[in-house]
Image 1 (cartoon, rainbow, N blue to C red):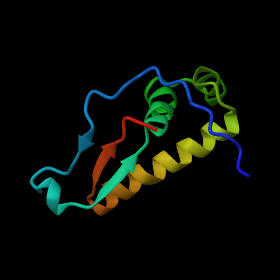
Image 2: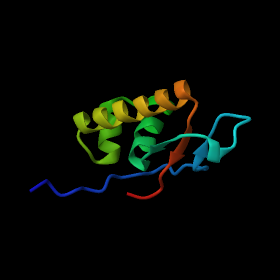
Image 3: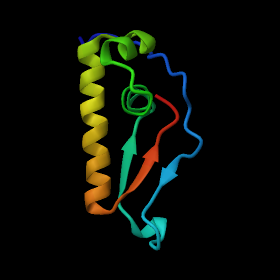
Image 4: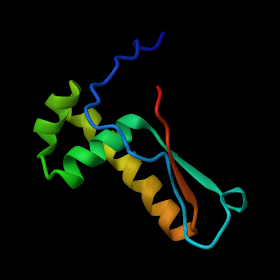
Length: 93
């Protein structure tokens, strides 16, 4: 039986839910979904330049978990940029 999911602490909510390449209709694009915890990890570590250990404490998760979340988020962002996909930020778990 898997371990129960613990809700992560999210302080910064996105102002928008979608990002897309200019000049292409959203319905014509592939989409990459970024979870709210991936968004928060990126915001804390890459945008606010907080060390991973401190960011993990703010989110109330372990540093290895934060590292896995960051790796997943960065891979999704790279995929969206390289392949010209839209990015959707999911608001809920």
